[in-house]
Amino acid sequence: MNESARIRGVLAPVVTPFKADLSPDTERFVAHCRWLISQNCGLAVFGTNSEANSMSIDERSMLLDELVAAGVDPARMMPGTGCCSITETVKLTAQAVRHGCAGVLMLPPFYYKGVSEEGLYRYFSEVVQRVGDARLKIYLYHIPPVAVVGITTGLVERLLKAYPDAIAGMKDSSGDWNNTKTFLDAFSVRAGLAVESGFDVFVGSESFLLENMRNGGVGTISAMANVNPGAIHKLYAESKLRTSNTERRTPNDGGRKQRKTGEQELEEMQAQLNLVRETFAKYPMIAALKQALAIFRNDPGWAKVRPPLVELTAEQAKTLAAELKAIGFNLKS
Image (cartoon, rainbow, N blue to C red; front, side, top):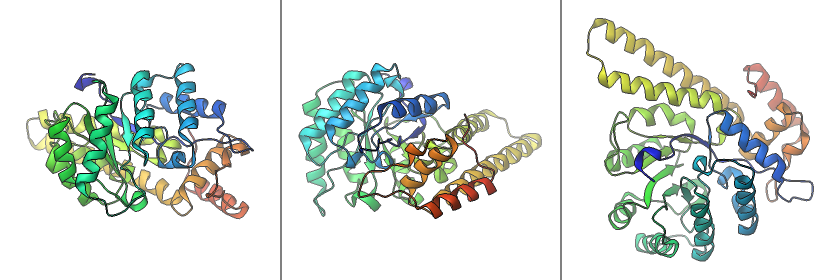
């Protein structure tokens, strides 16, 4: 895969629908993925908001096979394949590579806490070597609020030196812009120019999307893309376009005025995205996302989550619906 073919932009950690018996609902899953792609949104299936770690690797493998069999383009996919077991990670990763997925999103092994950078380096190194395929593109998944075990700049530097073609980037879900900026400054460049190291940085929340794009990032992999993909993609596309135009424009009074107006528009778009996220963030995120899909698709089955998660209460569901109506939110078809 050449650099220009890399997956960038907006991706959703696709929520996984379940049937009444808690088995994955393939029909709903494929339909939701198709809708996301129609909204210019890539598919980070089997992420945190997918309840991936509540599923077996066989279930994840089956769903990926079903997606590809249904004609969903694997070049729009970045499946989550990171497990605590090297062998399970290798199995899921190799499957994604065989299908032609654009990359894989890989958690560090997270059960044992306080592990060393050397231990994490050995883990990722073992995965790369066992998969043994030049098409492999790994996006490291940094989510310390959940996994506790994190990705450091020192680890990235070692991995890039050893496997420059396989280590493609990261998703930073630390929730700390300063942390994201540290990785951008270390491994990326500003203003959307060519990424010299080949290391692409996605933010884990669209709340940081505009800043990420201004500082050389490539997009977001965000829970909210499950329900608000079009608006998030619009900010991504506009910020990418205006950043590029700013680089080429010759400064003059008119240009400064135009840039100011453009920046204001981008800030307003970002503020609207933040408002939608803040509404959902009042509730357990996965249950709220699924409840919204149940509401707007008139399909109560979408609300089902797997234990240990629980659905929103009837009162919470009613309040969420009212709050979304109050801010004028609707699921775009």
